[in-house]
Image (cartoon, rainbow, N blue to C red; front, side, top):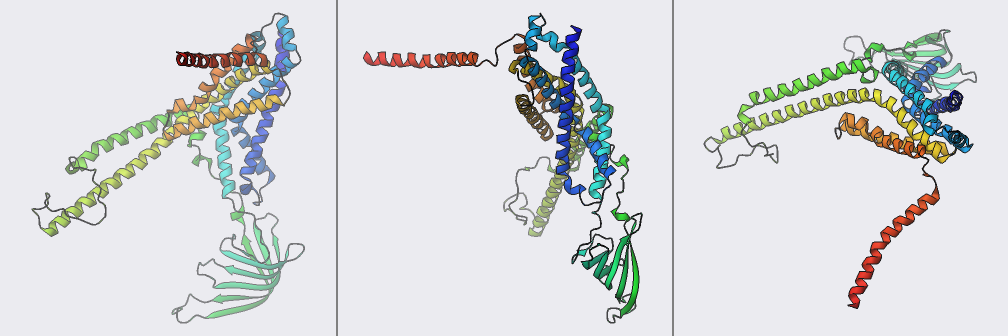
Length: 490
């Protein structure tokens, strides 16, 4: 019995690791495709990109792990069934439940590890990944001065190079606009040729210019609006140095990101959820208590009336008829101003409550996600293992197709539940556990059919069942037709 357990575990562990890393690799490639514009052309070092991909791979584990368990369990039992190893075990008196027992224990261990990972490792990985991605996206593109194009990514300077030499360092027809004083194009340098090179540490870009002129408008004198002196200076050789520190990758302090809901564990989420809930309740109570106190004159008024225009109109014969026309206009104007102020205040409070409630819901969603990941691993196993024993097909063909279909179904239901919870259409707990509630009965059904050797995939059984249904469906029609015929004969 122990040898059989070891055989099943060995047969299962290999596909599990392979499919997990394949799924992780596919998700990483999708990430690279999505953020390729933020990574290319910025002169990033290879270790920066490697660090980003390393942290990103941790964030994809909640998607890759359930898919790997589903596919590997389906492949394992499909291979055992295809090579008649399941038949041999059953003929020796070993039931499918006993064969699945070591894998069930392993799946429980994986679920426990998934919970630990989601609660302790994933928040740290999210913090590292999000902060590094933010810094990369904020980083400027690497210096790329092209021919005939004004380059303005250099801070306080605009540079135009007419033509470049074959080596890329020699430049011709150079124009440099100096905007350090923020007064427009009052300082321009023009040169026939030059050499463009950077310092060994890459901190500065040095232009060595030959045979040029400096043109400068003198605007710091009195009466500069009427008198605008112009200065031109020629040079044989001139060197300009540009600071490239703005093009370096500057790391933001991670403390600025650590209070985000994606970077918190269960204990921290409980604290924030409790604080946000109490704050929201207190703000609503304060509004309910202070609103009638501030607007007592309007409590008994009909607030359903909305004026068609913003202009002030006085209806004759109403309660204002005892006032003069000027007083009536003034009273109505004050009433409209107060009503608009009330509406503006209520709109502001409504928006504030909506933002606070969305933040509270997001914290609750992440809290439930800590548990749904580990539970999804169990659900996927109880779908994949019995389904593999039923279809009896191994390899990467049919099992892959079936696994992808079930995983897409799981993912779509999860997204529907999460979006519904975020929009307030469902409770957070109901939305986050919707996919598990839908797929868990399917797992129990497949496990029951596999353990009782039900011919679930036998087409003859399905044909007989469809034939019985068609007979039951057609028999009432025949009876009704015979009754109508009997009635006509009478």
